Length: 401
Ligand SMILES: *Cc1c(COP(=O)(O)O)cnc(C)c1O
Image (tube, rainbow, N blue to C red; front, side, top):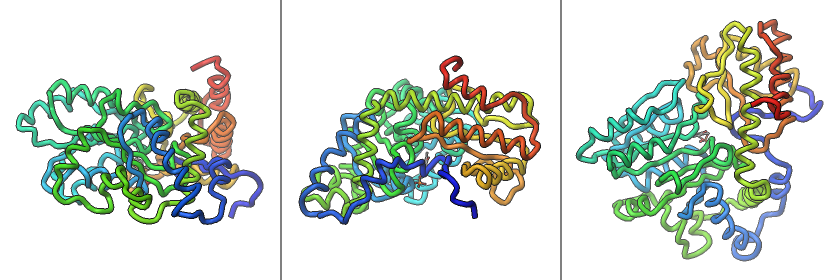
């Protein structure tokens, strides 16, 4: 048990740190679900959610975590036997594909490994070979939270366009929305997914599926659609409860309302810029330590393919576990476990960890985590070179990028 001697910081890639404002907005008596504040407030969520995803289309809100949105999105556009092409850059692409397989879809996966982004040339080649247009949907993950790889969604759209392929482009933005730049309409994305507990700074429990006109058409042609996941009544509600297929997620909605206000007050592009700056501060720290270390390394070498919301790191096992334990016990910081990099019962599992820097994060939180890691490296006699804390401070000062 760690004594309650100061603020604890959960620096993992979801759930992310909760702003006091969000907690405060949720701290209220059970609201009236027939009339009043809740009903009036809920109507305003849609345009603000659309603004965050940069779309003019529609959004269905579910009482669900990210896995629920995977199923919600698929249930509206893929019938059993339909083919989906999954572009995997880590555990989350594979997981979504597995969800599709569980719903009876025929799933083909192109695996780009754990350290590089989707290669659109390979996608284009595969789509070009699908002359009969058997592939109904391409499933991509914007940021794979296990590997911290960020994929260039525009190049995947370009592969579909170059081949004139009609498949829907479906993108999991659960780890990237309101962290990394994303433009649903400008990038030609048909279906976008997100969940409340990452960049949206709200407790886990709300899932979002945005869909454009092409996906809406596919949904209209589907024969049976799960009543619960059906996005149609949720976006064309006859009564308030249609929005949620039952009772509204009352307190979560007040929390989300506050989080969307915070994003609007800061400005979405400033939110993206802040995540970029904080991410570069973390990279500078790890790159400084990496130089003189014995195998401590960022997972993704190419900066343009790195997430601004999460950073995956590898090191000789069992160093990752020792370091996570040290910073938790001595500095009140919880770092993320490695995910999808090695099996859990394998000693190699102890050679991977992640830092989440999504949502409610600022310079002092990043410097605190970086300083705690540096202290941990020293305490555990792990070799490293220059000061990561100094390198991060230099980035935050604006003197380096
Ligand atoms: C977190 C995450 C998920 C899963 O979300 P849960 O809420 O844990 O079900 C799926 N995809 C990505 C990219 C994620 O980051």
